[in-house]
Length: 418
Picture 1 (tube, helix red, strand yellow):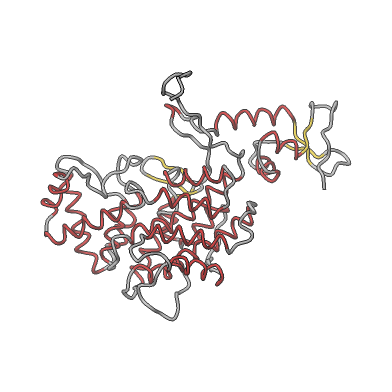
Picture 2: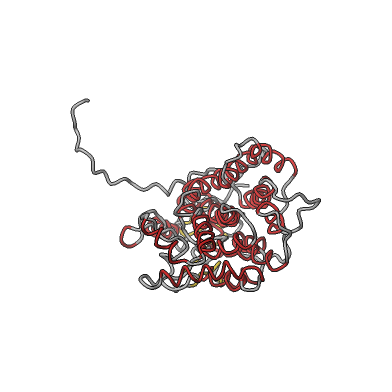
């Protein structure tokens, strides 16, 4: 059914059809109605017409505002600025769609928080399940990797393999992308090699992930800490990996490919791998019995101390605060917690930095007998839900808007042919 053609010469000026409005704004028709629901556009159904019409001047003003506010490089000081309704970081707190993220993580499962980010609706008790075809393809691909492959290698390969099994991957409608998300995340977990063989994986994603991270039998408190860690890490505004996902989505890459772009950036030592460095530091402190000689060796080697400070939190990292409180309830977490406190106190003599979430994750992974790479796995699985939320948001924006212009500083043309 076609929208009504624009009405001309009527009171209020020229009217645009939904199709024309979408084309002028560079968005999908359904996004036009989202603008209406948010109060950013007004619509009117013409007498006898079958579709809504929109005031041309109002649409043009919104298009100008979108170009001004939503393009790369529009932030003050030349920083990147992208309009988003997902996460706000403010005054040592952060919020998911306006709700305190730490309270959500303390009270809701990872899957429930993911649904909240994606849809703005809470779905109590929701669980994600991977279809056997998708899970089997991902497992085969991961099993073909060398034994020394890292966790992000495995997850990236699993995402690519799962995408080939999904004939609907190129459908970028909201319902299709949400279906992909609910399949992809459990597929990633299922594809990871087991540390302990059991007859069942459990219902929650945290239960399934536990058996891929450690051979120990889970207890309720430790499992709750893992699930809370997943919820705390689900999104953190425009982190480097999230920006990569939005660039891919801006180019209309499908959700699997966008997530794969995120994994590529996450693997850097300044991002997803930071908790592994903190894990090894904790083990060294536990072996030495004191943080002082370990910190001295790190500084002598010219390395920064992992697990301390965060550029977005001048005070305490709220994610670390929540996770440390939960770790206090795990009986055998005492030594690792004491080592973490020693690290903070030792460095605070000269640089008063608070512990960040990487150090809290390291305490969790050390306490639960996990490998140093386990924190990276937790981070990557958790952040996949946030990446999907950002991809969904970007699919509703003008295509290819993530295209900054380079500031050329090379030799001025014309130069002689080399």
